[in-house]
Length: 316
Ligand code: NAD
Image 1 (cartoon, protein in one colour):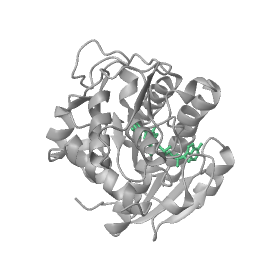
Image 2 (cartoon, rainbow, N blue to C red; image 1 turned 180 degrees about the vertical axis):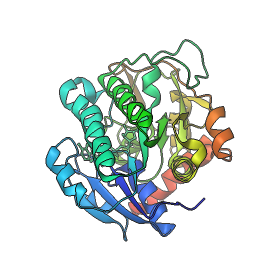
Image 3 (cartoon, rainbow, N blue to C red; image 1 turned 30 degrees about the horizontal axis):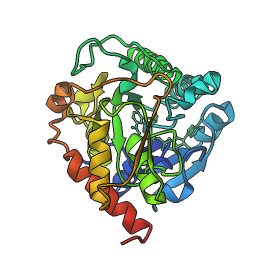
């Protein structure tokens, strides 16, 4: 569905997911402005045709600059994006999730912007007592990152009560071309692929039996753009995942096969701080409201990612 909004602000649009979403919207003919501080993104990721403002959204002066930018919808994806790294500086992590979100929400109120979508995470559920987990499961964060996400969600919901048309999209493990292969703190599939590309043993932190809901970024883009355009999504919180679980061991095997090195060595190490044992989404709510088609299978999605990264690095 094409976007009913004429000018869309994509925060974190120089990062992995935000740049894919921004590119899709530009392709649909929307005016897009990306705002990003480039702490984990790249200016080269900002799609041609989009405006770009380099700014740190935790700062009030960023809001002064954004006040001069015309937009009628916000897709808020900018944030420190690693659960493990959130233990290094919890206060900075809190500012990145909660403070920046509150500043943006206040700016929307002051500018009369009506639509706001927020990037949340499956990590807010912690060790969910029942799987697949649906949106009614109470949050139980195990990382500062997840606590920041649920805190920011609370502010988004508070502004929904004040009249903003909000949608919260909780995402599990998103993977696909364009993930930051230099950041070995964030993104399971991208981390393992980075070791393969470097010719190093794949370092896996945590047991191979852990399982996750993996979703290809193309399916995430469809979820975000359909949610943006759909009045049915106003005021809703959604699990935007594939609804299918795969173990870490399966992911490593699929990557090695897609890369053509089924026997590439793997080094199994201890887990990361606050990591979950298992997670898979119940996605009934979003599928029903937005009529999303089934997601790409993990096998096809990983094959696509490996092929695109090899092409990008001229390895084919
Ligand atoms: P990413 O790190 O590639 O993108 C985040 C972008 O935000 C980066 O470009 C970074 O430079 C920018 N940024 C960070 N702090 C900022 C600040 N203070 N001001 C301005 N820009 C800032 O991460 P991603 O994988 O694209 O994730 C996008 C969003 O989705 C994040 O909020 C992340 O927490 C959330 N999320 C991601 C996943 C996943 O699997 N990738 C899963 C659940 C939720």
